[in-house]
Amino acid sequence: MELEVHKAKEIDVYKDTVRIHAAVRGDIHEGQICKLSVDGKSKLVAIRGVEDDPKSIIRVDELTQIQLGLIPGQTYDFEIEPVGWLGEWLWAWRFADPAARFGARAQLSSVVLGIMSALLALWSVYLAFR
Image 1 (cartoon, rainbow, N blue to C red):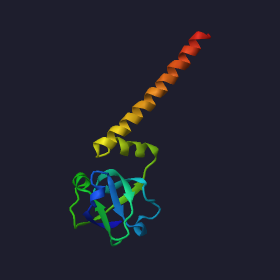
Image 2: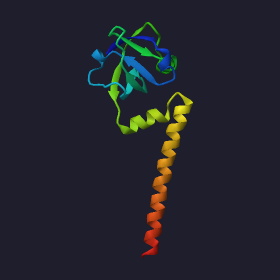
Image 3: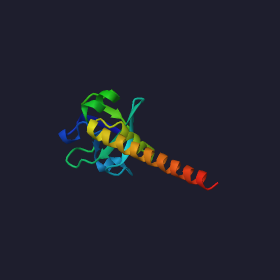
Image 4: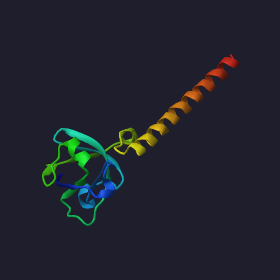
């Protein structure tokens, strides 16, 4: 989809979020994590809506503009494809905001440690009753 790049709203800076009008997003729902691709580069972003802007623009923060090589005011041909749960996890793991990124990494560490604990418990029960 052809969209003109505009500066992100202040609330979206360092949030790995882009804003695209609902009329041009198709089946992509607000809040969905998607792979945003342009000119051979891509980034995982959260898709949000914007009702007070023209339908032909995309609001992108400066960090994402740099990572994707975008220039404000220029029009690009973007591809947006939803990602599954692994993509959502990777989005949180690579989040631009350090506080949110730390939270996601702490959650994953907890899950991994919980699985390891359960496996060790099962192994000890197996050893005790064999």
